[in-house]
Length: 315
Ligand SMILES: NC(=O)c1ccc[n+]([C@@H]2O[C@H](COP(=O)([O-])OP(=O)(O)OC[C@H]3O[C@@H](n4cnc5c(N)ncnc54)[C@H](OP(=O)(O)O)[C@@H]3O)[C@@H](O)[C@H]2O)c1
Image 1: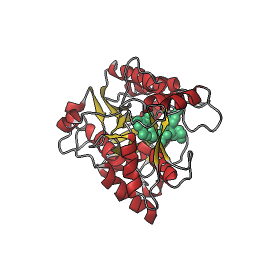
Image 2 (image 1 turned 30 degrees about the vertical axis):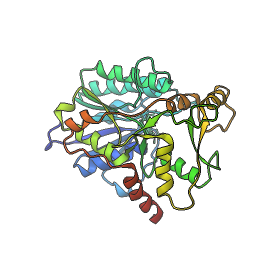
Image 3 (image 1 turned 90 degrees about the vertical axis):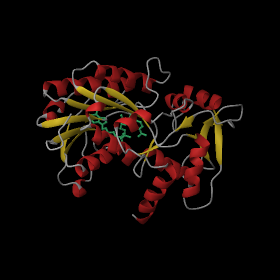
């Protein structure tokens, strides 16, 4: 546990990303100094002059141990949702976690917070989940005081998912004519999986509060927003809040999505793993998180989305 009066510097791997930027803001608000580790400097530091940036790569380990010098804790976020020719799931999840854990031990760091994902389990169908599981197992095998978070869908103003939903609504992204989800049945008309989206600021609060709550050490938390939705019900919330005419919400049959992703043509906006994961429930029971984080009250999807869509429109 970090003592509230000895907050110190917290290293955030992947701190320039969607989740990372929110965590950096939350760290600063709580009196920590944040140090970011990423491969490139794509972070607007004009609003965060105190944030330190260290260039490094968690996959080959370059710059990782030196970035940890003088830190009191590490928040390891780096991960990918789709493989590229530069980074596989194995590298970005398993190898990266191994390097970060080794460097944290060598640097004498005690407190370690790990980003995993909902659905992570041994023998998961998706490669994403399988490699997240193996990374979690590496964390559990260390002597560091660790905490693992498994969020499902995360939404927020800079998030890829929110941007995509807005483009679907405006007819600016495939399939252009409607807001899609993967559905069961011959025509995809049946909603078969549920999601429980969490607002990015609520998730960032948990990562930072965990640093000072001893009961969270060596525990894994499933986290989500307050309400589960079927995919079409969730899209309907965005549809209702977004300005402009309501867009139709229609299912793409799973069998078709699976067939297309088995032999993907260039430009296909989803991959096999994403189809598999969209067919699984990604919901959780918040009892453990509410027990260990007193007062934690994640914001409902509709009100939080209304809040930031207004800011986005103004900006
Ligand atoms: N977004 C979601 O809905 C969601 C849901 C559940 C779990 N998660 C997990 O949350 C984590 C963060 O997701 P995100 O949405 O914030 O991703 P993101 O926006 O793509 O950010 C990824 C961050 O990692 C850095 N990075 C990537 N490869 C790196 C490497 N080899 N070495 C050092 N830094 C590297 C990137 O900067 P550079 O490219 O400059 O290196 C960037 O700072 C991931 O582990 C993801 O699996 C996300």
